[in-house]
Image 1 (cartoon, rainbow, N blue to C red):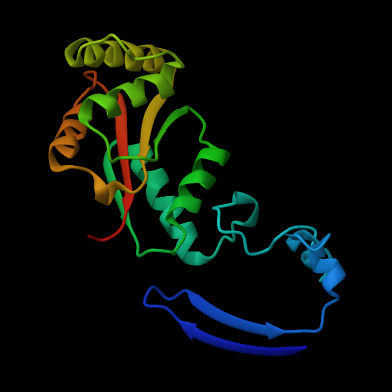
Image 2 (cartoon, rainbow, N blue to C red):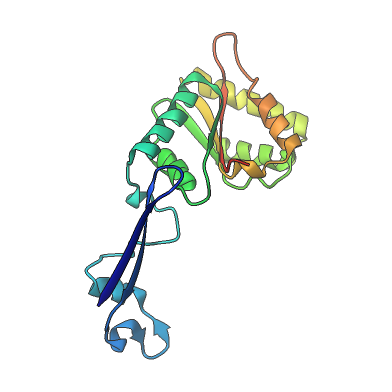
Length: 205
């Protein structure tokens, strides 16, 4: 087995490592019946219970390094203070993983809505938000009626002691008109507090 490792530091300060390996491994443990590649068999042979290098943002593998904890605190402060919060980072730094970790852990007194596909019209985003918060379809409502229903739902959450936080991943893809519509949603409030806060997570552009 040959192992070559190169270690460097990214612009964000995160340590990056590249590993290249070559090894002698029995073909029977890699290929099932000569047809299907059995990667799980490979990982088990190396002592892993599951793949340690998955392509999906698996929160079981979240590592609380300083940069990610600081970003997490930034989002939590934005929720606590209300209004609009922005978190940016380059591709591959773990923004989506951070979003899902926050959703998984939750916060006391906070109801989350998660919009992971912002490449939609404002009407579609409103319906997605309504469905996420209520579990009911937003079809059949006009935009004005849907905004009225959302305000009613937000008041209900506030009466129960909950604040609504809308977490928007890939926010750099938002159309400017949709972004303006969402900004206007953040104006929904009572005399005492904001009913909704927006968390925009995306790339610097």
